[in-house]
Image (tube, rainbow, N blue to C red):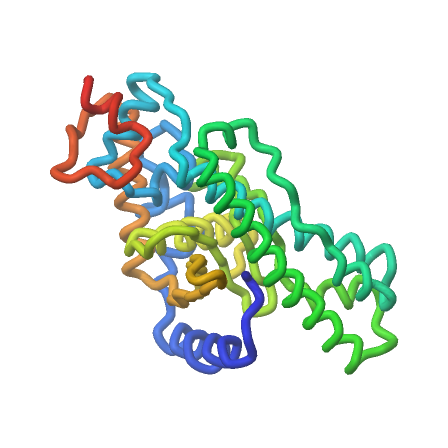
Amino acid sequence: MYFLSEEERRYVLRKLLPEARRDPVHDELRGWNWHQPPLAPVYEAPLGLWEVAGQYCPTGRDLFLRRVEGKHVAPSAAMVVGGVLHGVVTDLILAAKRAIYAQGSDCVPSLSALPAPQPQRADLERLSSAEREALAVHVGLLAAFERHRIVERVEDILARQPHIGLDALAAWALPVVVEQRLDGRFLGLSSHLSADAFAFGEPMIADLKFGPQQPFHRLTTTGYALVLESVTEMPIDIGSVVYACFSGGHLRLERDFHRIDDELRQWFIEARDERMRLVEEGIDPGRPAACAEDCPYEAVCAGV
């Protein structure tokens, strides 16, 4: 899911990165300037990055209900399914890396036989039998796709570099860190953040979605870029939101490549400040004009 085709890689390296160099981000909006405005947080209440970027509720009333009113609800069916599918991708990449380190150039048969990870979530019981059956099919399709891409990449490296070492093979074939743990405290965020993936070959922040495209999804890659810059002092200029869906028995992918420019950074900072203030001052923003489909807070929100 996170591995680019040669055409996509050329698009990033030959178009987006040169554009970012010609029109660089203002230094005050780089994460390493977390200690001064506008990045320095004004309020004290730390937020999860998803609490800033996940703007499915336009007014942020879900955040108010959870953090101010202390009302917690079970995840929706879509959230359960998305969590399972995210886990499939992460588990397969980690299993592939383990096989490479254990077997080196002899790892291809093991990679070809990697089983589809089995969901171990207690909340699977929230899904109907039809939803569980569909999920099982989608897990199989996703695992087959990811397995094929991994084997293809490893075989390509071995064909060109048959004497490559273990660490180099893993790095060149699978140049991505999944579930990258980050400390966001410099930016007023949680100290236990987890980015879906960091592709260090480009370098690029990637986020995986199993739902319809939304403009605010770019806030997730932007937030993680700012956090990475704050802890590494390395510029991160490119993001990719990977949209996966299943149609006609096939997995479909669309990648939203984008520059993490001044506009996105300012949007993220403004959203962070607004939502930190909401929590710290206990502001009820009220219900939105239209609620998101499958919002887990719908029933609670209506009763408050």
